[in-house]
Image 1 (cartoon, one colour):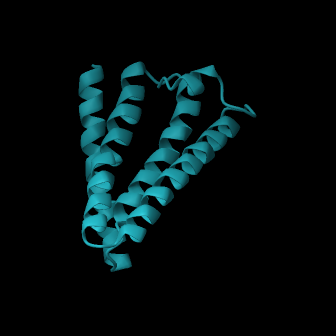
Image 2: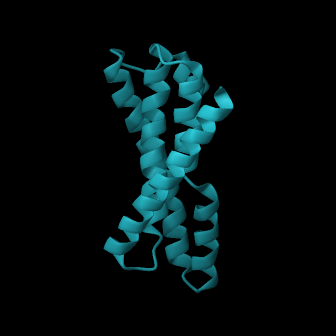
Length: 137
């Protein structure tokens, strides 16, 4: 059951990533990879939220896996981030490439922290519990 839930979640996450990427590129009109940055930051926030909310919920483990591993895994993309960084650098935009790396890491950490904070508020805790810190769905 976990495998099916992960596969379905992954497919939905990939479709959502494509949609966000199309919208971000159409709105930005620059060489900067706004679409990948947007999905990675949004995905970090969603994962942070889920990691706080799901351990306290009655959601079945297969659905948890589908949402965290499947959807968030399919929605975010480290490989595209790495590729776009190399392309920017090879095209002579080393400063833009470094800006992308720093922004991706810093904003990703801030986004997952914010998602965890919102999740903690939703489940009535001031801080995340050991389940969230351990990274278990």
